[in-house]
Amino acid sequence: MKKSEDIDQSVKGMVSIVGAGPGDPELITVKGQKRIATAQVILYDYLLDEQLLAGAPSTCEIICVGKRSGLHSQEQSVINALLVRYAKQGKRVVRLKGGDPFIFGRGGEEVKTLRTQDIPFEVVPAVTSALGAAASLQNSLTHRERASSLIFATGHEDPEKGAPTIDWKHLHIPNSTLVLYMAMKHLPTIVEQLLKAGKSKDTPVAIVQWATMPQEQKLISTLDRVVDAIEQSEISSPAIVIIGRVLDLVHHDAS
Ligand code: SAH
Image 1: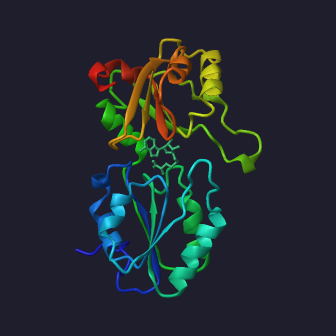
Image 2: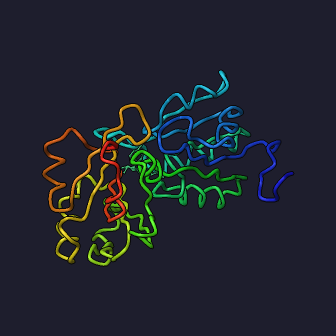
């Protein structure tokens, strides 16, 4: 049965904004995989496992537009312009993004551009990396005995916004799990502020780098020790940081 929100796939010149999932190429959705298989142009992010692109037609033009540390990322405006240009050429464009397109992924800005330009588009959601990390830890983020709310926050706000808008003391919420994206660089400051806000020193913290991928690394620590533990390990970005009592339930062989 065709759902009303499904875009007519015979339309020429359209964009599918597709979430690729957390890393393991098998964790993309069936719909996402189908869009790759019929794409004429794919614009993809650096963090993605390139195996995902193996299902693209041999004639498909595949362009990496993503961030890579040390190299300049393509400006979002350049990506937006490419989406518009290819769609206006009548191409079936796939904008393949890490995790879910709408979780700290600038999918909203791409949607705004496509709407303004009257270009037909759809959004294909996906498993966000926080959920990939929780699966790797085999740990619920909302275990009923430990957390009744779950917060996704970024540790790295858009520098163009000027002063940070997150006041970390407000994110110290009892009975809650805090999940941080892009937080490795500023973790010492974030930890310091959470401790100052009264979060207990022994609150468990888990870091999962490259969640669901073969090179995955995990570290389990506590709020007062995690910064040192990271320094003594090889773990770094891209990583998800999970803070909360739900991690009391983590199996230690998952670390
Ligand atoms: N839209 C993406 C997030 C983009 S922001 C999503 O839904 O997952 C980029 C950040 O996501 C990284 O800095 C890191 O914090 C996190 N991330 C993405 N892929 C990851 C992975 N495989 N393992 C751990 N963290 C990941």
